[in-house]
Length: 101
Image (cartoon, rainbow, N blue to C red; front, side, top):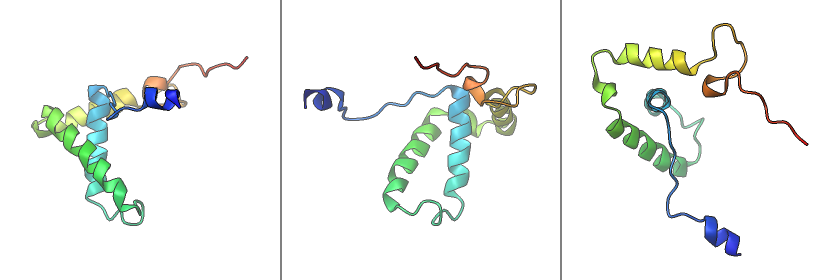
């Protein structure tokens, strides 16, 4: 019982790199502009999605820059798998999997 009280927080903090935030912001914007009733069937999910999108919009000054498309593409390239590495994604690319005992 004490463990549960010790780990409960009034809010959850998620840290993203600027590239991660930019790519996620773009994706959330596209998600919100499509008919997602089929994909997001639970109306309660929209509240946190809108909150995340709003936080990203307020935090990312680059989303209104004239070179936004170039910035977004550069972020996608940096986060994607290395050209010669067909495995992994972004920061996890090239990282070894944890080994068991």
